Image 1 (cartoon, helix red, strand yellow):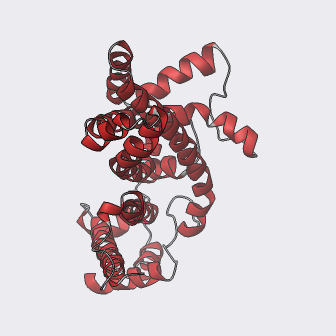
Image 2 (cartoon, rainbow, N blue to C red):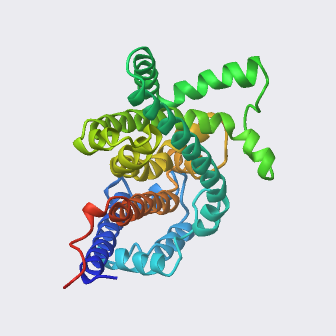
Length: 319
């Protein structure tokens, strides 16, 4: 590993840690910025006995100065302890671990659909100007404009209620059953992102098709298939991979809408429910999870870019 790459990686990791620290401080501060007494906030407005107030005060260190409370909480988080859910009376880490596999399955499923459909339509649109290009642009414009909850409603009405091809709600058990149950949620989640990826792919492909080295390859008699794959698509992968990386984190947020619409008991619906009932320990943990996923996805994309396009190598090896 070159020194420049090592410095870059170290700088990105340090930046990731700093952003997570700032995020953790903002998230932790939110409970203190909420109007009213923190104990009443944690109890969601229910009457609090003196004994219960004393127990909550001790559990959350509310009698300590604010910064002391934050550092105590941060120390617990670094040790894997995110506290206990106010609603479920369960350790937040265990609760999230139970819900995360369902959301991960849904995101991976949707990401496969986005990649296949988005790349195929983007490439087709770039290579077939005229009617095909116009049809793809019309579809992508429509898909990008349709919110996930509208897509979920339409898909449920047509394919679950009217036709009965897919289950109406739930995540299923086992791989095949889960694949069947999560098909409609995955399509609803993937629709907007597939349209966006198709637009980005089309734009990147058209940009590469207009470059001089493509004309040179064609003039030398290189087969058109090789020209497209080796000289156009390969060089267009940079912006495509960048968009795909940011989509992964964006999907974690969008799952809250889709999972709620299809009654899928994953991390997204847990976040919506926790915000509704003010289960702040769960909201804190899930917010940090989403931010961490976004930062890690961006880091992976940055590390992949020099491998995709050697022209972007990080300063080259030290001489």
